[in-house]
Length: 342
Image 1 (cartoon, rainbow, N blue to C red):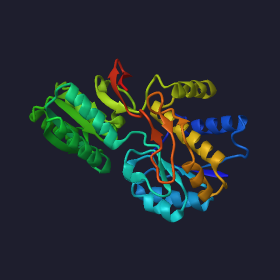
Image 2 (cartoon, rainbow, N blue to C red; image 1 turned 180 degrees about the vertical axis):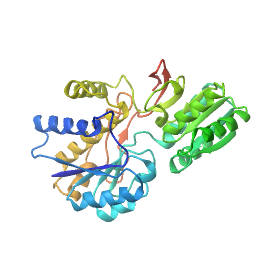
Image 3 (cartoon, rainbow, N blue to C red; image 1 turned 90 degrees about the vertical axis):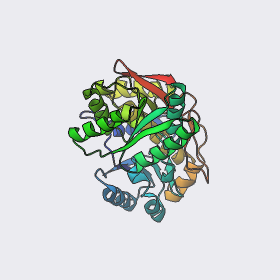
């Protein structure tokens, strides 16, 4: 049977496509352990570049007979593709953060959760007694939905929004400097970044360039690749070094391939593969409809993402896969993310 990999965001580190390598390792192990009784072919579609490419890629995968699609991963694409997959009647597992990316044929392993992460950030703001919060949001669906949930939470803890500025991820350094200056002029007690990630690092660099070092918090995207610019930043994450599922798989992956991988991408790849394998095992038929039924039958599958105890499961009316303590709070210390709270 065939499984499609809809790549709207690269899973590479250096020369290695760790995303594909991780999936292949999981499928190989499942075959060796007897969980799979027939070969599974992974079919890649490069859909990086925009929603048009993502939609076309999904249609091509369906046309090639894929009974399941893994992807997309970016909220901007995972939400608008829902009606397309419903039309194609091929189940897909996305790993975006918006609950709007679920549907009859759209299952979700939310590697991050826009409303849940906002709640964790509000809790941190309240604990640190920040009453004037400056928000920098990436322009687009991700920043908008994050911002909506954050503002609701801030109102519940009597914290005021001192500034709410949008960031264009395609901006140059001068524009980021202007946004940083606008945040500074609002005299906040902390800054919160909400967005896909890279623009958050650029914003932190601009803030440091002003000689200003306020407490900074952000969502999962900002901490994907720790760097000097985000030293001290507090951020939500679904990576927890005490999760034994992730630790054991990371050891297996490094022992097999001798290459590095982004922990978030590696954990997501493990969970996507584990979910696909379990769906194949439980599917009454090895076609698209059978795979949807197989996904709906999954319960209590141990997850690499999240704090220890996070599991994966679906049901006929439940497309939200992760169950348990998924989101944790971390901080970059000495260039290394450290879990502060589960």
